Image: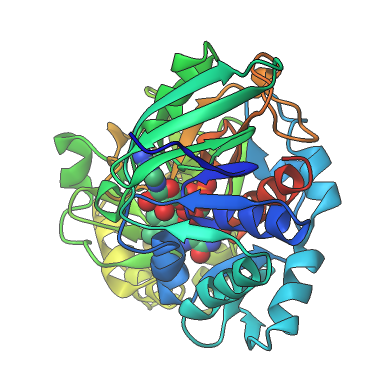
Length: 400
Ligand SMILES: Cc1cc2nc3c(=O)[nH]c(=O)nc-3n(C[C@H](O)[C@H](O)[C@H](O)COP(=O)(O)OP(=O)(O)OC[C@H]3O[C@@H](n4cnc5c(N)ncnc54)[C@H](O)[C@@H]3O)c2cc1C
């Protein structure tokens, strides 16, 4: 048997966090090996942001993340913020723009971000192996008492003092997602918090689906609320339930059995608007008037469920109140999140109590680090999850 190849740092997982950690450690002069089981690194970066990678957000702080410990992300985010990654993007002359709400996207393809990371890894002398499957991890002490990790893989065995787990979450298995990181945590006795799909569309049961029948493909600007959290963005009616950015955002906060409340007309107070229309356009039909602010199909469908359509002057105060409630406070209890197949992220993961928020090293197992999405820190939609990957990767890279 060949002796294990020696490194100072081995990173498992060549996604956003793993690449960032590897390039940072490599540029510090550490001998770094990065192992990726897929046929190429950065596959999720390539499909992110509709192919243009929403690589960060202009305004990022711990309130944009969910975790059992809401303070855990503060340290890394304050040491490696959006401006640091933007500086790297500018240094590599990658054109970008703000789409909305501080979200920064590449003007061109996401490949530019993967190339940036690969170029920086090259500068740091990082060795990258793809199609590498790790079969076993052992932790051993040599005669001098120095502890190392030895990895058996299909490409050979490798040894290092620092082992970084950056294998991400369970979302989009067809892009290479595995539960490998959680397995390593369990092997070394670290707690893992329950996982579930995040930033995901929500399904409705058959009764609620009937209510939205015929609306599939319709979208609306709405405010969606659940558990004291609300987001204003587009919602999309689908044949299985609700999707669109505002729904994805609220899905991170939604727990089974929770109702969500949707305001389909956040721009106006419908009671006031109808009272005004009764004065100014008394003969116009209400569905036409509401249809000027919402898609006609949605206005019509929503009105059907609270009574007949007639000229606006004919509505009583009681009817107006019911119609207003229908549009401003639609309350629905989703039957579940759609699965990992379509979820953008995984909520839960390695319990942050197990890790240093400064170095991402395990408190129990010296030399073992967890970064990125595998950790119980989940960001909002809008570039926050990549910022977490960059920040946690960079901070760990300074200590491995
Ligand atoms: C469709 C989609 C679009 C998204 N768009 C955005 C966006 O625009 N902005 C944003 O901020 N976030 C976005 N996200 C979320 C973002 O992609 C993730 O949060 C981020 O990639 C997490 O980085 P990571 O390095 O921790 O994990 P990943 O990027 O998932 O990387 C993990 C890597 O580990 C590899 N791996 C897994 N198991 C093993 C194993 N056993 N051995 C070796 N390697 C392994 C995987 O193949 C992968 O390369 C999107 C997610 C999806 C699914």
